[in-house]
Length: 264
Image 1 (cartoon, one colour):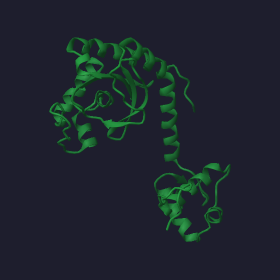
Image 2 (tube, helix red, strand yellow):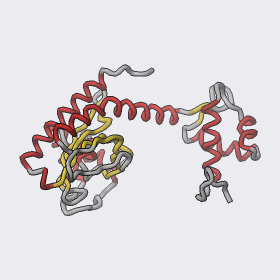
Image 3 (cartoon, one colour):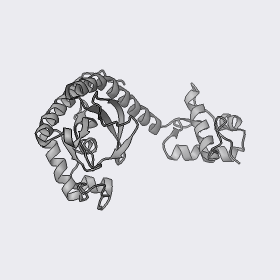
Image 4 (cartoon, one colour):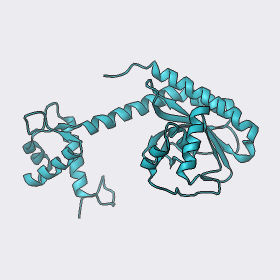
């Protein structure tokens, strides 16, 4: 049986665990790591270590310097690290704006990024209302039927949406959910034009949301900021007012991000 993790009863997947040990060893080393070094660290036969390292290399997590057989971290690790850095910067720059938005609207404000076909909430500030939408940081929601998700999709046309979601139709959560990619493409075009997205009970009945895209210095959408509220507290006349308010905050964050010093 594979070893348990930190005394827990859930067994590990041994090959995955060994692959992670390899990554950690290479990351800690100040010089390229040889196959012999990795074999000594893992304590298993050399051919098994080679297969593990070669798999990581083929996936881009490891690389070999030109003309050598030793291992260094590959481009995928650096790309993931860059994404992590961007997420941290986005949280750092946006949190004060989230606080202000929650205070001004008295509604829960969220910050999200795209994670494959979902939106991932990476920060939030709760409202003071007795009845508030208690979204959790770390929660994943679908892109196509949430305000945050549609804000993240604002630059997509129908072809891009089909590449992302496949042929469709999309899963319906409520009677308001958009299930047609053709219709979703039309909505994305509207979002791009007006600068904010809405969710009118599309994921959960009785809940409305507005969100706007946050862009980096190159104009690429890297996140979304928005608010959520119960339907009774979010009538049509307030919808557009809050949408424009959220759009303004997103633009402020985008401008602030464009002034951040970029790491080499």
